[in-house]
Image 1: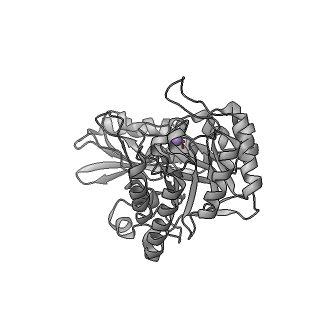
Image 2: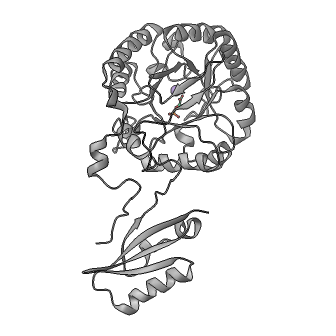
Image 3: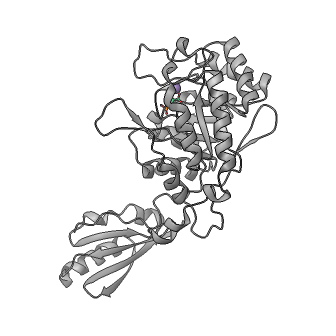
Length: 373
Ligand code: PEP
Ligand code: MN
């Protein structure tokens, strides 16, 4: 098991008996401790076995002012500080044509399709249109997480069968959501990329099971989750042995708790700085309204996303879910042209880590927990 470390800054003027109590408690818990006199403050250098150290919670101990972990809480999801690459490490997604799509490489990857798979004929016709417009991957929900139990819940196994048909007939790769661990074997059999939806980002038992699956996972940010929580969710999958995780920013609820969604485009450079995982943006769920999708898709491209997830429908007015945010195929083609032009115009460094922040911000891998003073 790996060794990890942290630094404990003690409260100013702490008496020696109290300081020794903190030190002795750490030693009893199996940690190695070195006491350093830092002038005004004393601090303790603590190291030990990964699990023992990570389960300590010294920030709540009397006499402890700050805790500085020296190892990130999500080592697998974090960008290695010794990595010479400034980009994402690409994740490969298989397709029906035999030619894999690389997410996180030089090309902007656009995943298009309806919110829900509704009917075979229209789904296949749409998939052909999307492929011809430049999509290598087709998305569509078979198991739908709906706010109301009375809303359309998806075609389930029939939806998966239609997706398999899309793959076969168009050569595209197919992306669909797995909502429940119980459905995982069926979804794994069909999907080239397994989507974990916003509501399930913290379904830890599902995430653990995805850790041992041999298919890439598209992990959407919970709509009330921080980027740190997204990285910890990714860590569940990565630490289980599945290294193919793609992150997706899909909008968060605003502070007033209205139904308005705010697409957090600042999450893209933030995640780029902290992690090597590819980052997609979903301007459809991130806006909730068709007229906002193209502008936000353009912005997401400019901000350096590795790709986009866009909902498209043959006839949005008849969609059984999320019709209000679906683009028509004509709107989608126009959006593709616009984002392709933006992507071409971006300087080669635009998807690198913002290196100035890396130099002037916190040291990579060190996350300071808020102090008590
Ligand atoms: C979807 O992609 O159709 C979906 C339900 O997305 P989210 O989980 O982001 O709400
Ligand atoms: Mn949807």
